[in-house]
Length: 232
Image (cartoon, rainbow, N blue to C red; front, side):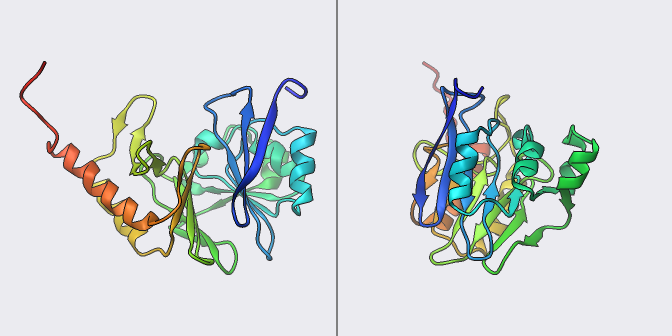
């Protein structure tokens, strides 16, 4: 892929850098996020391609200390990324069955965690929310106004609300009780911004309020609020 594709890199917010999307568009157009901290940099999720230019750009910002993956759809080349930056990849134990690489290199770099929360440094932690996958996680930073990185565990929608799905390609929704549970967990977090898996997947302000309102909208839809018996 080197020479034919490249990863766009740009500043998303203070101390948050988008790695990707890959151009020309590759896979689903996803991106990773490099979160810079005084206690070491964290890469949230992975894009498939890691070329020399991308590695050099990340090295310019201090490299990567930890890679944290939201769910199995981002597993692809995570071991290659870990090997290149000599860092661990954190994966929730509930999704261990989806890891395809079990060779000695993978065992050296993959680290499975359990429970519902893992602290990464003074201001950043991982929360297991489930839903999309049993181990689906988000990253939460309480620094400043706070933000969450969601992959598609919580998906930013075109109207700058959010949504929740069991299966996006097959359009299978989550049940109302699951959405209530996820919203209740998120309600306890301090954050303004939401950074999702796509370049356009950003909510800049009122992030927690947005999640709560979106959950109510989603549940209302499941319960028939938008149903009409008039078909045209």
